[in-house]
Image (cartoon, rainbow over all chains, first blue to last red; front, top):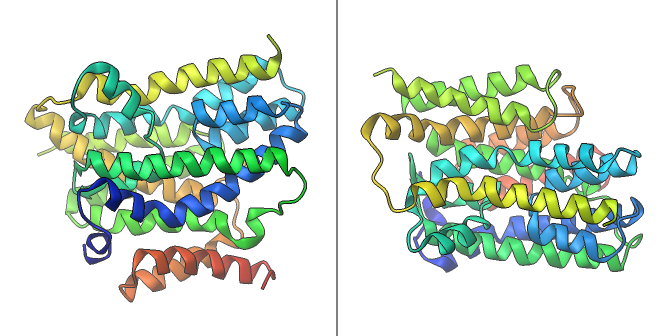
Amino acid sequence: MGRVEQAGGDRFRDGARAILPYAIAGSTFGASFGVLAKVAGMGSLAPIVMSATTFGGSAQYAAISVLDAGGGAAAAIAAAVLLNARYAPISISVGPVFEGPAWRRFLEAQLIVDESWAISAVGPGEFSRRRLIGAGLVLYVAWIGGTTVGVVGAGLIGDPERLGLDAAFPALFLALLVPQARERRAFAAAVAGAAIALALVPFAAPGIPIVVASTACLLGLRS
Amino acid sequence: MSTAWTVVALAGAATFALKAVGPVLLGGRELPAPVIGVASLLTPALLAALVVTQLLGGDRELVLDERLVGLAAAVVALVLRAPILVVVVGAAAATALARGFL
């Protein structure tokens, strides 16, 4: 647990500090989204509004790649929705820690992304709402700011993959998984989730493997 | 409405709903014990699925590329109990090196 507790704490600023490296990576991916969206013919304002509302890198990339390839609006929307479908199980896992009136829970829920959710996990099945909100807000600003820079400066920014930033994300999720998977059943659920996702990648639309992998948690029904 | 704005509006509305499901329906509630048993395994299952899809996922295919070098560096850093920032930066640097950038 030492690694995660180093960045531990239940305050908003603990989450904000923990997310900083990913916010920097996220802003470069946001910039490349802005560039690609401009190239795909979305104009300048629509990509920025999309970053503020859809707020999910893979879903946004998928939607513009469909548009860029000449696909219609329906196919682009379907791609984005499939890729963000994992937020249903993710938001259910963290749902009970949200409090206050429904409109506030609705608004705060929009800050749930893979990274802010992962950073809000403080123990097996335990989440910190304040860490999630602190992390989510920083990432939100970085993502929209990056998108704006990309739209405005299209062409000036290189490919973030050259810097290896795409490998930073599996490394983050692995580092967060280790303390979550120490218990025997949690380890089994992790292995099953990974196996389900890998088996489905070649056959299912992007996004679906992660949604189906969430069924590995049903191992929890066995006592 | 142009195609771009139709996509922005509908993808955004769907995302609002997907993200709000848990907090709006479950916020502030105590879950029954069997549900907690299942929900506590949701986190490791989803994190593991994110690791493998971000590591090997391509467009409907599994891709073995320089990301594997980055993950190997991350595993070494984790075994050495390095801080999480070192794990992540090390993975990116190893991948960039493998791609011949540095």
